[in-house]
Image 1: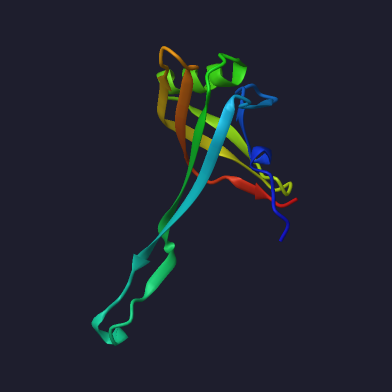
Image 2: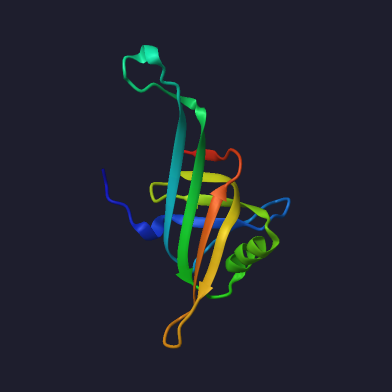
Length: 137
């Protein structure tokens, strides 16, 4: 497997228009994606002490975390407005190998911080709402 550049894993936010345009959240310095699969435990006395899981009966979640420098650009304004308005937005994930994922996400938390001798930073966590679409390269 070929190593991939972390800076090529992009998070983009949609503008909400009918012909939606996605803008890269360019001030992000680090991001991460976690998919949680929570299967249902169906173990019974008749399973001889072996756990039995029903994978497709559980809940899957996807969480994206972003850490970046605050630059007050269009993409950050869209995130900030979604956080203050408690609105869902469409996001795209672009992976270094060309795969992509698009879906609706809700802002779970949005933080801004700064110190007297540094730049202002922001942190945001978004959680998928509903099903999304994965597209292989």
